[in-house]
Image (cartoon, rainbow, N blue to C red; front, side):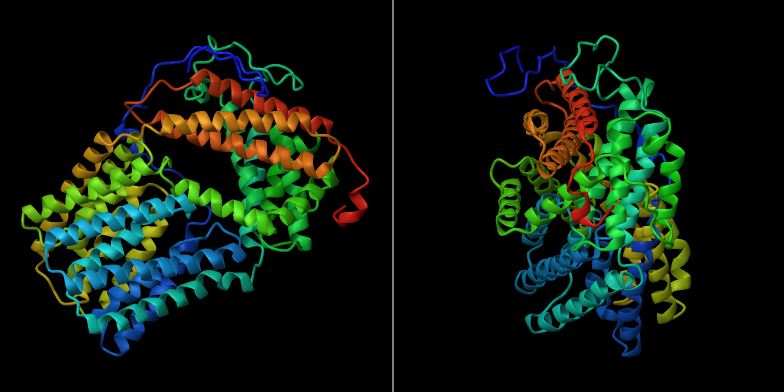
Length: 601
């Protein structure tokens, strides 16, 4: 980007000198470092165990454990959607089950009609690329496309007859329906559980931001960027010396996620009204951080977060200035989102993410190339199960080179350690069919319990579980299974990383440019809003969402290589200007006549 004049009608943002493109260091230590466990790690772990145990035990009772692979395809759907409110989770999981059945149907029909390994590998690679793009476009969240690819690729290389397919698909659909019930069962006990957790995270992030906001640059009423690049090396490095920008970004993302969760949760209830008021308090601490009394007191925010996360009543803080405006705005936004025009706009946005100019296209090509290369290499070496290599390559195809490198190290280390665990537990699993079922359930729980610490740690449990699934169809030589898995892992990781290196995502920089323009427009709109609370607060939330997208786009582009220079300093300037605009609009908020009409005060 050159120093060209800004087009009329756009906010005035001075174009600062660009830094040369740089890829974050490919550090093994950072890739393998353990993180604290997720606050909801036990939910997917317990859900998948319950969703799998009932079909497994039913098949054990009728003596058909050879069909476990089909029931497991449906049971694994219970891993999805645990961060979504239950109304949205029901629709999302229904789509996951149908998508799982559709992918499995394509694989089973192909396996029954075609015996060529070359064609099967090509179909598996194409399915993996399609599943990757669909999961990224719909932003379904972890475990994303990997489970779909595992199921469809394994089915491609399983013996199959056309007359068996309806029964196998019915078994998957039935297990998926049961997984749907398991994932939604907590709504009977705690209807607003996902919303409470999302709001608690927002309060905790806001408390961190309020306790250590970092230096405040400029006054809140001045949204223009400042030329302080000499003191600040750019957005990728500012958290090293000053955690303030990092804290503000984390708080913005958490508050934005909380609003999205509340907007998707359905009709307002008294609990959700209280949660909305708490998000207003968290937002106030985020846009105008700083320790002190009132809503920005970090200790008070942490106390509210603990009460919100617990099972007792949701705390109801005193109404802060502007609370009525904010709740009036969220009601208006909820109504707008439910309108037919909003749903059409959402579908158009999804189609744009899937269209020819989509930034997901290079990732799809990368997935297709990596999976095909991994499968053909394994087939050339005589490996009987090339789908393991296909799944490994698919798991490595991330948004940029840095993430792909991290996943290559994590997957390789986890699988190599996992085959050692499999060798140790195999004699126990062969005691009897019930022992085999119990071992699979144990590793299914362990995988979800550990994977939030680091992907490699979860892979240590995933690998023996995947190998034990083969035992349901009959015993296999342990040495053959271990040797094939090690070879498939190494070849799949090498092919996947080679694809990530050769097929560059040069559209990542274009996504940054679009995010910068969107942030400029959102900031200008927030500054132009008048006294109407619905318009003003909707503009503020739009600006917050644009800042979250801007940081995500910048992080993705920063980890990619072989692309044009990124506007690092403009990224920093736009982010700071957006934060100052949020603070300025927060200071202009105040109580309005809408307070009595919403019943929240």
